[in-house]
Image (cartoon, rainbow, N blue to C red; front, side, top):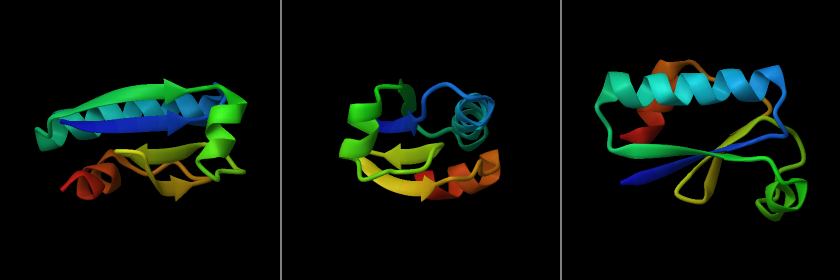
Amino acid sequence: MKLIQILGTGCAKCEKLKQNAEEAITQSGAEATVEKVTDINEITSFGVMMTPALAIDGEVKLVGKVPSPAEIAALLE
């Protein structure tokens, strides 16, 4: 089971990234859960200075953009 973390304070882009991540899980059939990380101290502990960001199993994969569900699904493979 993979852990997808959405790093962001709750802006519209962060919400869209969460929706796209959930859709990617549905489309790919991957076993994963989505967690929102909104605490700024926790976000910066990932080394992230721009949001939204996407981390999979604690590893930051994308920063500052909202990838499509297909792009996220490719990262889950």
